[in-house]
Amino acid sequence: MAVINKVTQLIFTGLFQEREAQRVSFVVFLPMYVATMLGNGLIILTVNTSKSLSSPMYFFLSHLSLVEICYSSTIAPKFISDLLTENKTISLDGCITQIFFFHFFGVAEILLLTVMAYDRYVAICKPLHYMTIMSRLVCHVLVFSSWLGGMFHSVIQILITVQLPFCGPHVIDHYFCDLHPLFKLACTDTFVEGIIVFANSGLVATISFLFLISSYVVILVHLRNQSAEGRRKALSTCASHITVVLLFFGPAIFLYLRPSSTFTEDKLVAVFYTMVTPMLNPIIYTLRNAEVKNAMKRLWRRKNPKTD
Image (cartoon, rainbow, N blue to C red; front, side):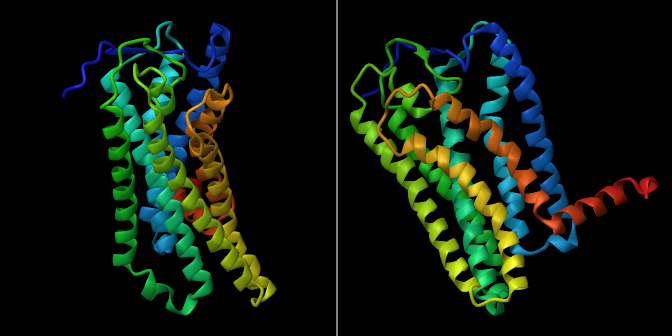
């Protein structure tokens, strides 16, 4: 039986109610989004044009930057433009579409970070077999699997959502569409759906996070037998990845590893992983990685030979 929805248009309450706060937010978040696009785009360009960045680690990094661009673009443009409007509206179909791509790219990022942890494990713990284990074919399969996993996860979320009837109210207490805020608008009990979301989102994040932590525990144990210089070099390549993992997984686990509830801090936590983290990732990876910085300098010299 087809679901008939009386609600076709939704209204966001937004991040802040005060007009002055919204204007200040626009001035803050627009440059952050531009920085996210430019920073991650620069990493993709650098990796794909530099012969010195041909290792699997940088192949995965370029795909992570691509996911960050897509992930941020799912939320940021609508959110930023709404800061300048009185009525922050979105169609129900548009809301469900936003949820689909938000979860698609979000889980693809989680799986890519997991793949990158596995890559570091092989590189540090099995260095003699690294290029055999992490062959070009294997790298492409792992990246494709990350995208496919994100798609599969998101399809499940949408199949749950489209079966819910919405007959009012039509005000969604958030600045973008996500499952928990939307479920509150359904004119039916969503306890079962909430449990499924808990299992599908929270457990994916938690299992991946535990795998990541386990990988780095094994790496740290293995490094005890290395020289001081070997430990320093290995840890420097891992430190950036660990930082990104903590920045991304902390908010995700907080929001999804629990049943649907009303937390006033949810929107502020969401700002962190939708706006701040995608901007910080390219900064974290370039500041702590001499190879990436040197490749960017060479790229700049090629594009601007007169500056030498």
